[in-house]
Figure (cartoon, each protein chain N blue to C red):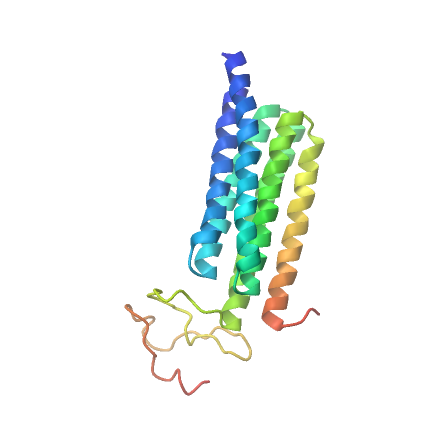
Length: 137
Length: 95
C-alpha cells in the first residue's frame, strides 16, 4: 500500500516540477516566470518529500522530510520576494501585455521606501501615468 | 497487491528522475538565454530544487535515508545563494 502512495506522490511531484521548468522557459517576463517556478516547484518538492516519508514510514525519516518541506515553504516565498523586489528596483521591463502595476510610482527610487497613496488607492484598467509621478524622477 | 505496487514504484522511480532531468535541461536553456541576471538566478534556483527532487527519488530507490540529509543541505545552501544574489542585484555590490 505504501508503494502505491509513494508512486502517486512521486509522479505528481515530478510532473509539477517539470511543469515549473516548462513555465520558466515559456513565460514572457521575469515575474511570471518566478510565479511558475516558486509555486509549482514548491508543490512538486513537497509532494516528492511526502512520497519519501510514505515510503519509509518511520519517525526519523518523516521528521526530516517534513522539516525539509517546512524549510522550502518558508524560504521559497522569501527568496522569490527578494529577487522580485530587487529586479523591480533595477527596472526590469514587464511583459508588454501587463494590465496593472500597483507599485508604479509608489516606490522612492533612492531610498526604496514604499509610500502609501494619499488619495483613492489604485485606478483600474490599463496603465496610465498618474499625476505627480513625472515630477519625482 | 503489494507486488504490483512495488512494480509500479520501480517504474515511477525510473520515470521521475527522467522528468526532473528533462526539467533541468529546459531550465538550463533559460539559464543560458535569460536576458537579465535575475532570470538566471531564478533558473539556478529551480535547477537546485529539481536536484533536491532527484535526491529524494534516489532516497527511495536506494532505500537509504542518509540522502534525505543531503537534500536538506542542498536546500539550505540554495536559499543562501539566492538571497546573496538578490542583494547583489539590488545594490550592485556584495557587502
